[in-house]
Amino acid sequence: MREEVVRVREDVKDLAYSGIGGQAVMEGVMMKYKDTYAVAVRKPDHEIIVEKREYRGICKNKALRNLIFVRGIISFVESMVLGLSTLTFSASFFEEDDKASGAKPRNEKREKAEMGFTIALSLVLAVAIFMVLPFYASLFFQKYIPSETLVILIEGILRLLIFFAYILLISRMEDIKRVFMYHGAEHKCINCIEHGLDLNVENVKKSSREHKRCGTSFLFFVVIIAIIATMFIRVDSRLLRLLLRIAIIPLIAGISYEFIRLAGRSDNAVINLLSKPGLWMQKLTTREPDEEMIEVGIASVEAVFDWKSYVRTVRESEAT
Image (tube, rainbow, N blue to C red; front, top):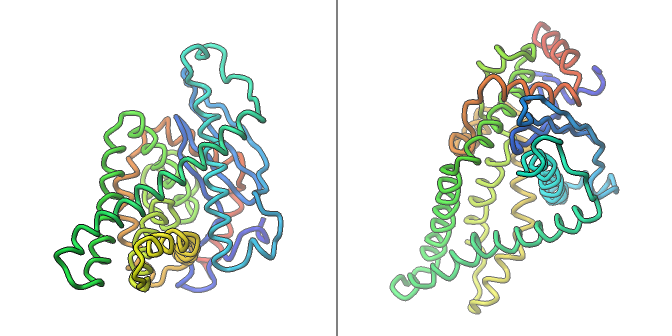
């Protein structure tokens, strides 16, 4: 296991990076380590069921997967695919007609088709709401403000406000509140082992529910970097300006991924300072979990990750 642990800290500026990541699902937690992921779900009868599978991603080319900026785009798409798949699996336990019998039989061909449509629709809506809408809204101010830089800044502020409003709106939904509690359990489990603590309910309870590698932080930096990037798009045609904004989205995602990746491996003071806004955003997208939720998170970690060997390695590193 020692060889499998990725860069356990070599000096005081490096974090004990575990390489494990996850996502909250409906009444459960998904954890992924390398090519293996597990979804742990608390069924309506309170039993915890765990499904463990292999996921090798959409791109098999190792050189491409390790190419800076490109790997962020690949990771983002793969996260969406895997995230929707695991959400579908967890939701299958809570269908009205299926509570007694468990999950419905999975039609993988149909699931893939539905997933592809959902991903495509989600991307179109995201571009429309977070890119197109702020752009056209900012054109109103162009009539009264001669400075192009100021108009672009207003566009960025509008995009940021829409992002905040979206998070606040969904956080008021009862089902989403429970997902956010499981999101907190996911973070707390990872923080627990990355700080060299045994993975049990008591240690997880006292661990932080904020993590620098969180998807919330990633999305926040996508919005911020988009504001900076659009400052350099200076063309007369409105249509071309909009198309260029959409065209650079993959690059923005790649840059955001690289920062989140660096932040997850570093305890540098500057990196920590830049990570603060994303961590503050996580106060909206995570909630304190109860003990049953923590147990689900632990079950998911243990299905894919040898945390005991990892924690032992962290402690040995800290002792030297």
